[in-house]
Length: 338
Ligand code: EPU
Image (cartoon, rainbow, N blue to C red; front, side, top):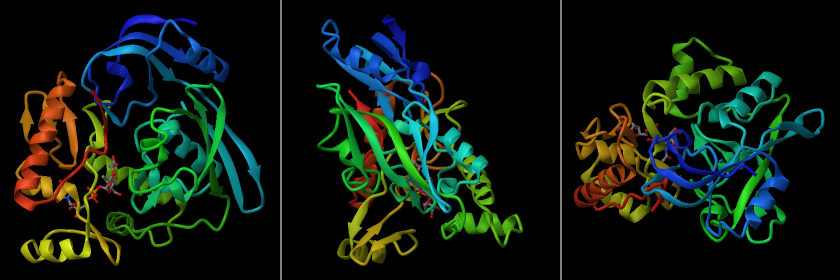
């Protein structure tokens, strides 16, 4: 096993934070993963995959295992549907493009989300009216203590808004190694209801969109307001949109009648954190190399050499101001590694 020392993780996290891994190993096979977990000489292990949902605030004093398991295969199919198994280290958007090229529907709204397949279930990635849970069949995960591979079906993952068992009871206990998704081969179920998709399709003069049209529209929308991590370091939405009760919402909307909102169900409302942050005057703000994106205030950015601590400090300031001005708590969506 090729264990390297003092490796910069700058290229392994989409925020582009330059911290060092004391030890580092590339994982390309399941047996190798099991063996690496058993290494007694490195009692502390840290898993990194696409690095698209983490803020690294310190050097990592552990064996950093970069999950680079590859492969996309069809495991089952009938006339109408297909089950696709993708290994954890596959790039998410590459999987979306692969499925569209095969004519498989279900992932088009989730185009261009940064990160890898293996981390998609952890936060139940979602965009434009679709969440991973809508197409998710199961995943395989390795128990870090025993090296045993365990299956989690959709129900066992306990998916919620940007949430799953892997952020709760199963946190740090498993490494997701592969995911199985159920996609459609025909009679695709299109999700065009999200406002900006509808408008984008209208602007393009498309009345009967294909799955490819929807993907193209989503890519155009995302490119117009979300920074490309290859150009400006970021982790997508830094905060979750706060969900509040109907009672709290009624009070909130009386004092802020112009605030956008989504109805989650009849008792719960979601307020876009991006709007709250913009109202507090942070949109486009920059403190050194840490900043708030100029087109989407929910996204914190690293203009080059920001440290994780600088971004964390900015995020705390934002939380305080939102609390002060709106009496609402916003929580990070990104996993903060202390
Ligand atoms: N808004 C502002 N100012 C801003 C940003 C947003 O006023 O700076 C307002 C918009 O005008 C709109 C509302 O907030 O009325 C919602 O904005 P948007 O449609 O951009 O969606 P969002 O709620 O800010 C969520 C997800 C995104 C996902 C989009 C589209 C979360 C935390 N974020 O953002 O996910 O792409 O919806 O579905 O739920 C991600 O998780 O990394 C991510 C980018």
